[in-house]
Length: 216
Image (cartoon, helix red, strand yellow):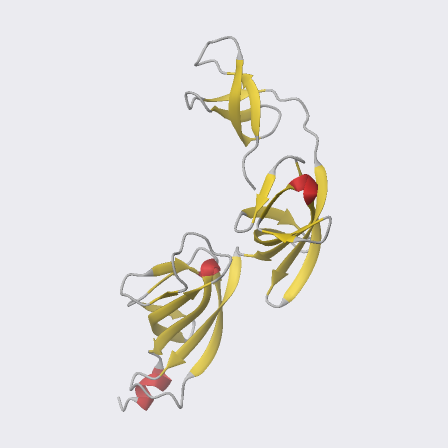
């Protein structure tokens, strides 16, 4: 979720008046950064009001509900990542949709207007691979699913190995909820994306079965 902004005095500006600060971390002494001069310092903040919101986290085809507490005026947005504690674990999740109290689905909304935060786990993710033989044939193309850390990068033109699988990436399809991309497909050498942003990887099979198909 985005950082909250508060009004406190900045020791570097030394104006004696309160100015806008970004809250970087909370605790007994909060860590804040002055919006005017960029100075980072510690300060005591008054307890903030929060609202509890339902979160649905999807992972590997299953969903689990949990709750988070956020300031009512904090803006929630599709694509943002946050930590959520479920019954099973603490997960890194990405917002995929926001359902408001009147039933609408929005890309962005203040927390007080949100009923349910829909999300998917991105700390560890399943990546779908479509692998074709090195000889270019398609009859033996196979689909594989691998589990990798969400930040693991896949690069077009590079060979990757995971367990018994070895493959050279030829094309990447990115997810609709991934931000910072100007198109859906990437196929030029050097194009890259982390696993959490990938919908599917198309690649040339480099394992023993592929060598058998190509006559090696």
